[in-house]
Amino acid sequence: MYPKLIIDLKKLENNLNAVAEITKDRGHCSLMIVTKGLCADKEMVKMVAENPNVDFIADSRVKNIASFADTARAAGKKTVLLRIPMHCEAAEVVKYVDLSFNSELSTIGLLNEEAEKAGIVHDIVLMIDLGDLREGIFFEREDLIRQAVSEILKMKNIRLYGIGVNLTCYGAIIPKYDNLSKLVEIGRKIEEEFGIELQMISGGNSSSIYLIDKGEMPEGINNLRLGEAFLLGNDTAYETKLPGTTGDGLILQAQIIELKEKPSLPIGEVGVDAFGQKPYYEDRGMMKRAIIGIGKQDTDLDSMTPRDSQIEIMGGSSDHIILDVTHCDREYKVGDIVEFELGYGGMLKTATSPYVEKEYRK
Ligand SMILES: *Cc1c(COP(=O)(O)O)cnc(C)c1O
Image (tube, rainbow, N blue to C red):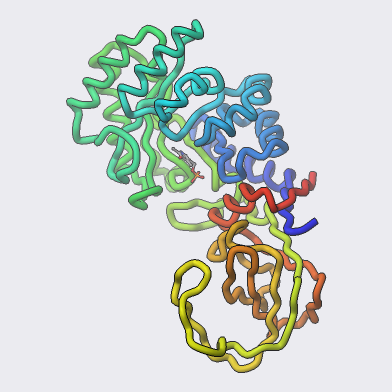
């Protein structure tokens, strides 16, 4: 059945080993593999759990972690929750997550209560915001960082495992030697002032890995969290391909449901499209238009690239995507399959859509 997402586990494993070589061998960091981009696909997680290079398996959703906690733990990998928890999920976090990222004392307090009930100690990473302006205590407020650490250390069922930063997500701020060394400095200050040892100084996501080969990763950063670098082979700071990786470990296939010659300009008064947007059309005269059976409900039109470079994506609606196949050497017909490589947004949506089948290559 189509649409179908082909998940090539061999290629993903090859990507994993390539990023591990950079992160661990050359960067001396532990490796946290992030599964959310592929909606914590079970087969992918199994491969990740079995790979000896992987130290932690992380996701942003407790539901995803609940689905793989047994697999990960059985393979000796810690589960990590990346999105700071909601109050309402504290009990679930303590149950399925070995290490959670946090920035709010009220939430950490709830985790402490739940951990006490469960008779365990829950590890946390305290998030510091270095200017990307998503989660974390703002780095200039050392008073607030000190106060948070002091409160956390009073909680009997919480252990401060480390500190971390997230960049290039909201503010699109690129990790550099300068901002990441601030994180290391904050870590050292906490250790000195409170006489504790932090196990982890987590230096970011797939946008931080490029620093290793440039020799600009500050000493002291000892963990990276990699999703897109592993799944698509991307360095997300400067949008380059990481050495030894491929971007075709995931391929989206869709079937042509209509193929007709029609004009390129719609006829009649132009209103708004299915999503309330005013469309723009270019007059290309008569053209060969193919419709495929997949839409905005299942993928992101701006985050998919036809493998046949002569195809152009014209647009789409919830359930249809229209392709310009006028200039294709291949003579497409109804029933044919069109293939796409995916970007992050396209991958995320196809992996999440229940309408997209999955097929594995090993
Ligand atoms: C999503 C996420 C990651 C992984 O990001 P990639 O760009 O896919 O590597 C790492 N850390 C946090 C906090 C995240 O939310």
